[in-house]
Amino acid sequence: MFDEFWILYPRKVAKADARKAWLKLTEQQQLDACMAILNHVEYWKAKQTEMDYIPYPASWIRAERWEDEIVIEPKKEKIDKKWMFSNEGIESKAKELGVFGTGYDSYDSLKQKCMRKLNMSVQ
Image 1 (spheres, rainbow, N blue to C red):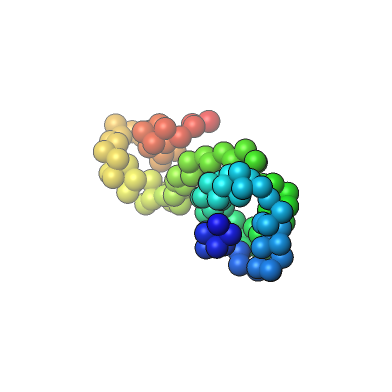
Image 2: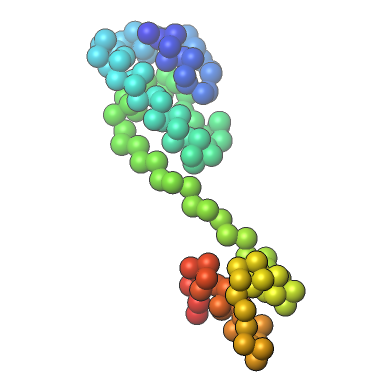
């Protein structure tokens, strides 16, 4: 079962050390580790974890990291806010969103209407 674990684990270093740690696990722990590694890999991808910050496989095994509680939060969508800093950008965003001014709107009030339409906080 170690080979299946090794295939799934993203940081491929110190394989002999990882195998030695693996062989000290019970069969149930090995099964649990194989099941859990999928969630850990997904978590590292969601967090865009750099390889240097993913533990060595032997360390992950020895620390029984398969028992860690992993919470994968949906990635927050970044809103491009460049449009907010120029009159041309505000006009363009208003047209894109179908926000029309009264003809007496200042760029600031037009910007606030766009922000409300985008569910952004207006202060």
